[in-house]
Image (cartoon, rainbow, N blue to C red; front, side):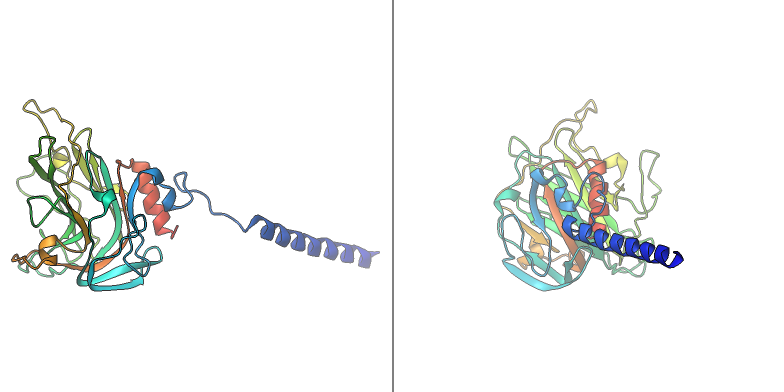
Length: 308
């Protein structure tokens, strides 16, 4: 009798294993739990996505199918999600992409970047390296909008100042310009309305997000899901009474995107020591025609960090 009981247990156990295995195959395998309500980064604000560079082995912009018109110092390496582009004083330069002829819009740009800080001593040269820029308009350097990693204001060799600078067209056609920046140390002139962030992301992967809110003319910068921009400079279009007025972002056209450099570097007209093509790596660039809420920014960060 004892032998029969042992045999029966063995058969049940074996049967259970076999049934579990069959169920797993039929279900297509286990699924990961959602992050922020999304299964993959591609689901975040999907209907508002204007452009997406996955940078998986080539420079194709996946919505338009556009490939770089020219590529300098670019190779492809393992990055945050699949592959990314490694730039050695390099860039990817594109022709005009119709989706990115931004007119009267809010905007969010999301990307991953690893920047090597070239200012290793306090008296060394400051280098401003663009992550992505949108050439166009009267400013030959900055263009419509550029997002930089800047070694200005050295705290230590891993401190990077993030900056977004823009110049676009008002409704009457006149230029409107400004910037959004994080201060990486407290300067003597700062009062308690200013915030700063040491932002020690030099030489390591970081998720960088820039937002422009057309309804309030407010722009913000985020790194790794946390807002880092200086709060005193986020609202950029106040009337004489201090009220923030709407200002939709409207790019001067024609314009074209460049990953890793400003247009003056690409066209050979640059004469400024600070203006240099990027040394670093970039992955997963997304451009949305809306302001992503904090929860969606966090979801993008966590999903892409997890390779999803």
